[in-house]
Length: 292
Image 1 (cartoon, rainbow, N blue to C red):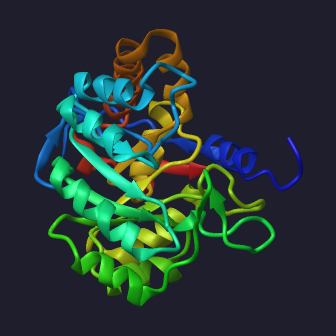
Image 2: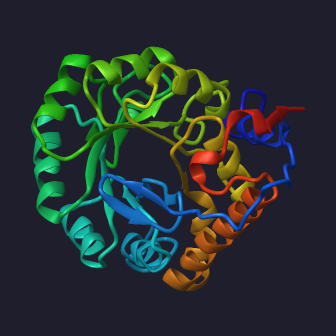
């Protein structure tokens, strides 16, 4: 990997975090979580993926079937209306993340469509606005651009659904999200969209300190196993998204393998909770984590 590769830096940071073992008063743990009025068996969620037909026919819908079978929260990224309708028809509880289209009317239409589909929350992917040259990004022929705080406030006010900002990697943006009255953020560098980006878990504790429970905090980027999930929760996340680690299983055997992978990650999380005396997710605390 090249110097400055944010995915390599993120993986190395994950692996530099060590865990205390705590055995006295330990019990069989409960990994369940409530998010936006829905109960899930696991804090392991899909990432806001898109364009998965190269992994499996109708890949996003198949991913949703796997999430539904594992009783996990499904996130949907860029995709057309028919795809989102197919995702939600599986019964998977879904959060829709919308790209930062230059035309805000497109965003408002997609917010309304997410409501009509029964999504439990909706949001915008703020970190996919510009390319490496500093120009408006072009994604599948659609022009993107950055969004101001005032624009974000308009998006939030346009819907009764909880609104989420994906791509927060600083306390500066986290504070702006509080000001906009969003109800969730995804701490993420969009799988290395910029070189030398801070690993999400490095900045996560600072973000959690300024958020102070005012909104849900989610994390993605490079999450591979239950240890990664445990570390993210310990450092301030409410739940954690898994992306590329689900794409291989999706390719192999569709929804069945996606379900099995989510359950495998959750099993490792439960084992780690049991050996650190964390009876439920609320007991996973920062003091358990040590930096190598």
